[in-house]
Image (cartoon, rainbow, N blue to C red; front, side, top):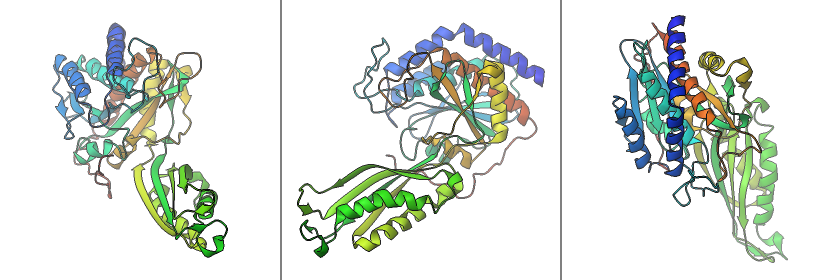
Length: 416
């Protein structure tokens, strides 16, 4: 079986080299025509056209956007490669020929690269004969929403029968031609918490006669994170960071209403499961001495992406063949969120970091200036295609037919 992977991997390398310019043109087309979550109709049609042109039979996801397509077949195992297709509601600030043509929309997180890589992997694998199983490629919408389009993919049964799933994400902190890997949590869960405090209001000359909401908000801002650090194992990496605070308009009037908004991030999945109840209790504990009324709106976001050790070892084998030992890095944990974590409710997963830095100051994610060194595209195609080959060979004889979702899998939430 090792020779099968070597021969097929070499064929993938040749295909990727021969189609390098076409892959770049695909990425640039996607970058110039971004679409937001659940509105990726043109993007979906574009991908579908490319897949059908290669003799494949993609199917649209139940959401109306996004696709799933299979390469190979037979009685062997099935592995999943996933790419996300939506853009961000940000203005493109780059002066390049492929800049966004749509006002206020931009592929500022690299999803145009992710889509191109998974599309390239599909086309490259479709050229091979006698795959030892099936590669199921998912072009997922709405990654940038909460709780993310991955919940719709899971609920629709798109992952059923597969043994494991792989994805990658652009990383502008490491050079193009490198790959970052990590076993265990590589991204954090990310939830949102809004706290509203209420009171009768009053004059700042007589705070003892009312409820000083600004003081109560200040206590929450400073005391809650401190209390949290003593309630949760530090290794869970749980943190609360406030992003917005609002109360009052006049310097000499105590307001009747105040609001805090922030995010809760955590690396440990078990700690994430209990975070909502814990935060509710701590908010009430901090506010109680002030006499303020309190309402907490806690919105569950995405779970952490916890990379399965065996799946990472398969990624590592592919990465060593793709970029060599010197090109493989240990990826640091990120406190950012990624809805690929929902896939782990069904099957083992692994997310890799694809180096995209081409020199000069790093162009950070979620900024209108974000761009990539396009040499990374070919690296990504080779990495995911080779990973799929390694996984198919490793899983021969261990087909997951009949695999059921993990207990307690959440139903899809309302789109946001």
